[in-house]
Length: 417
Image 1 (cartoon, one colour):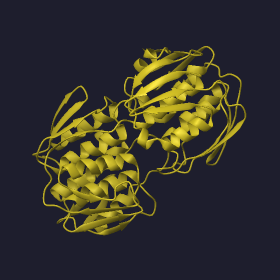
Image 2 (cartoon, rainbow, N blue to C red; image 1 turned 90 degrees about the vertical axis):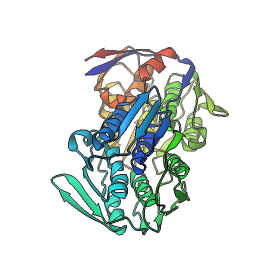
Image 3 (tube, rainbow, N blue to C red; image 1 turned 180 degrees about the vertical axis):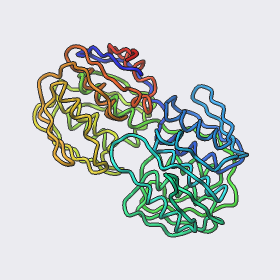
Image 4 (cartoon, one colour; image 1 turned 135 degrees about the vertical axis):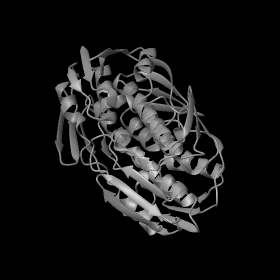
């Protein structure tokens, strides 16, 4: 098991290339199950979650070739409709194979998913939607067992917007008979990216990025060559690194069109953003201003950026309040930040951050993917040395983070714990 050692209080400068989006890549890779032809995907990041999805697709019978950031998937033959617990337990996005498997094979057996321990993320909304599309669903020894003669188009209303639920139903509906209308759909740009690829494969999807998505089922989907969008959460994480260290960096290949809420809070906290086509020049101010943040579904402030912004706010000139409305257990990083001399009090779904003059290096432990990033950001500004344990969480969602930070001037190294 690896750990990071970070010597803090160093300025960052230079350019960093933002990787392909993990949260877009995973559903797009799952969508390869919908066709017998080659799916060639570009800009796929090298991450643990990506490798987990590759292993899962191989288990199902797909043939996969990976060369740098290009992944070629051929699912002409699927020899198993089962996604076993051993492959699913570490990644919630594994549930995304359920819709495509049902659409392609009319049956599927998928283990209840795992992932970061940040709160309850039920899949009941997925299952209810599939039942309305004429599938029978049962839970047997921790597995979702689903069967259908053929998916039928349906009107589906999500009680709350669900990203993976919306993606799962969109994929299932592409091969259904008739029209499916998804209401109160999630609007995330990663969903738009999935719909764009599926439409390029011959699907008929309208309204992605809005609360109502319409899918007209087709008989078959063809192969495709597609470039996945870049990662807005990685970009936001580097913005936080620049802000907390009062640094200047240029982010190349940035999905600026998807980052309005992140940009707005960054500027409110004293940072400067200068957008140039698909790049963004980021300047952290000398003083960090306190702000209030409330996480929300897109286009609101993303829950995946909450932990990183809290790290920055620990050094703000005043009191900030952050409310978490998506996950009920997403303040686990706070106790570790307080070990670094932060002054944060959590009550229910709210964190009150009293800005301090200086963070101090300490031995801390990562609890989930974004918490890992928040500790790295805090360590970059802390006096002395910080040791971050359990960074395997971070490797799930950040490609070569220590190498990218080192290229910007950070003193960070990876060691065996």
